[in-house]
Image (cartoon, rainbow, N blue to C red; front, side):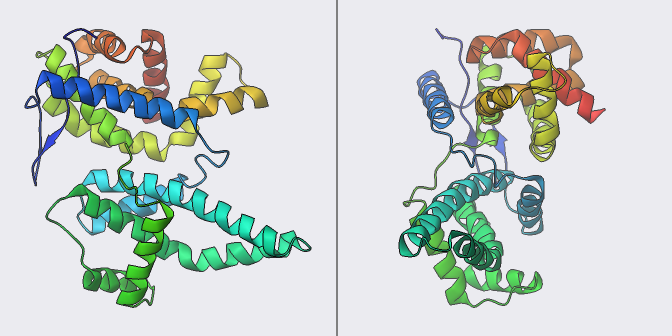
Length: 301
């Protein structure tokens, strides 16, 4: 990667500031993010993506918007919810199977009935924990949380809210700092600005946030289109779909795709230049970035 790199994000209470990170910091941050992306792809669960469905994401984003939280909170909350629910469900099913294997179906139904009642609060707890991790000044204390949940029709006490947060925190083994798609977008933009100062990354950033949210909410349709382009088949096989799951969880590909789409919209003349630089930064092929961009743009227009 020589001296051409990406930059990290430097955030104050109100805005993102590009170009303030040193080369050494950028280098370490890029290597770390790349490794975490590889580790995540290499350890995907069979339930991967089950709790990243459009309706759940819309709910998380709307809560963040209503509470005026930083956009990164929504993406962090999504990661926390996905990881916690997989661990929690697995633990409940294993425990139930051990306790009584005579009627597995009725036990599963009982577990899901129980979760259906608790799930809205679990989702909100993930938002709360993600917001606390963001270290912004706009914190939602327990009293505000209870009032907001009452507004949503959930009758809960302060104790219940705190117990739910603690349950999620313990379920995640006290680990809350997971990379999310917005982190990759911000980091890649920083690198892009470091390598190509002529690219107006500050202006791109604002559009990138909207593009990322669009792709996140339209993920199923966009990645289905990308799968068909990649396999050159209108009806990909089951095996092809199973292998493609890794692509759907590749945050580095998503990050470069978001920037490429935003660049196409704002600065088409620089599109090929930016794609070439993003390919150099990440090692992803130019063709892969172009395919992602074209599929996404087809859904936007």
